[in-house]
Each structure stands twice: as C-alpha cells, then as structure tokens.
Length: 222
Image (cartoon, rainbow, N blue to C red; front, side, top):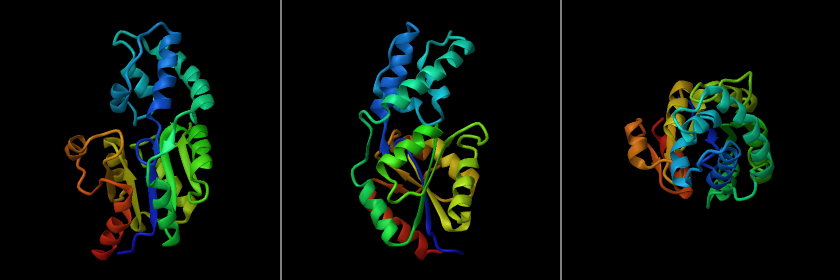
C-alpha cells in the first residue's frame, strides 16, 4: 500500500477557529429578519454541513423555506466582509503545516463554507503551505459527498491511496468514508469526543503536535 503523502484538512473547527465570526454573521441575519439570536455554544453544533443547514437549525421551526433562501445572500455579504474579524488558526496549526511541508506532504483544505470565503481565508493564513482550497460552489456537491476531496486530490496530483483526511465533525468522518480516505478526528474543534465516537471515529488527535506522529504510525502499518 502507498505511503501517505497528502493531507486533506477540513477548515472550520480543524485549522481555523471560525466560530465567533460565523456566530456574528448568522445572528446579524436573524436580527435583520426580527428573529432571536443564538449562542456560540448552540452554533457549535449547527456548523459543519453548510450555512443553509446552520440557518435551518438557527431559525424557529415554523420558518418557511423562502425566508431561509432570502437569508442566504445577506449572510454571504456580511460574512465576506467580516470573516477575518475574529477568525484565527488554532494554536499549533501553522507549525503543523510547516512540519508537514518540510517532510514533503502535499496539503489541501476542503470546506462546506462558501468557496470565496474558503479561498480568502486560506490566502490569509495558509498560502505558504496550502496550494488548494475548495469550498461550496454550484458545480461541486458539498460534504459529505466526496466531490471536494476528489477535486482537491486531482489538483494536487494525488490519489486516495496515499491520502488522509483530518476533520472535527461527523460530516468530516462521513466525507472521509465516502472518499475512501482514513480520517484523523481532532478534539479541539466543534464536536466532543463522544459525538465523534458515536459517528465512527477511531483515530484522534488531541493537539496539532500529535498529527505528525499519527501520520508516521499510519505509514508504519502500511
């Protein structure tokens, strides 16, 4: 079996702590529509499956589909303008990417965020190490469909046999499974360990400093 030489990262909750900016933007939309705000703790469970899903979770249950559809462009406009207000890489992530780069790993980021935001955030924080960043766009199905991962592998010139996926949610676990990639589940993101275990996680990183040794271990058993 091929050695792992490619790492596909999720974005929100994995490489970037985006929770506060996402919370502020969705709450801005809710306020525009006269609806009550939600807390960051609630949003921690909502994010990961695209912004439309998060809005569906955030609004009162009787809210109609047309209203949610009307919220989406308002969210996009606000988030595009404010996605860098509070968002920062998790501690140790940039150092991890540097170590992976030195060891010759290729890296990509795939996300259910809007593609323009994914590319802007990658350019701002990780451009030195990450060549490919793919978000939600009309011609590519969002996760847990494998489309973003397959597109990333194509652009990197890699294949699934030599790749690993790193994410923080049940959506990421399913994405990795659908893509035929092993998954490292991180414990610093939007989900706790119990939730990840319930969804089939078996390999965990509690801190970014553990990822290189996990990859080395995975390669040793191949």
